[in-house]
Length: 296
Image (cartoon, rainbow, N blue to C red; front, side, top):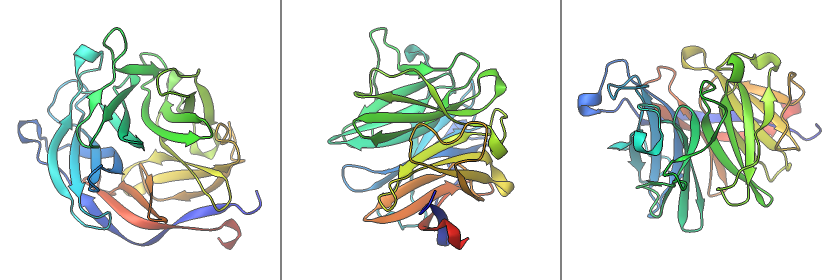
């Protein structure tokens, strides 16, 4: 597409979160992985990360919280365990995965995975969240089946619809799904918006989907991760249609970044990107710039 831009890391990274002290739930093998960053009602910056391989039991995952005064500060303050899975709400023990937060007016909406379903919680201050439950007292909104591991949700408002992007691997083939809603309660059927191509089709080939729309070119950009760690890889796609980033081909692929689990942050008109440390022992942030595709 003419005029397509590509993202580029702009300058040095700064670390904002490390390997937290979980008290009796700590384990030397634990890793802070998929996370969310947002600004709370009081202006402080919040970071919740899924910590895996802990001693919490079940699937070994829980949420830990950090707080920073400025987005550009290093070493945000650890604030302790923020949430654990609760079987009373139908959640898989130890199964919390990948939160994402979107503020709408005075309410903060968090979507997260419980290993099987995408769930919903809300907050007034952007720090303490309470689950939103259905008539049966369950926190789950939707999923792709017991063995597909629906996870890594993110919310984007496009037109008059909320788009929830997430990954799952029905039949052990990873894809990016999207469901839409007008009210965050009733959701459409799932639509596959990215699959296959050079990213592969393994169960972890389309993790951590994150979509932004650029005012500069009006295009939607999808980031999703294939690999974590020292050889991390995230593929980036551009499309005019927020529900189609290429199925089985690289038609929409515009580039790759050597990072994992990215989250883009637009603050005071400037783009930033957060990602995992290559060691998987913390989270970092850098500035991000968009450059014409033809210049690469």
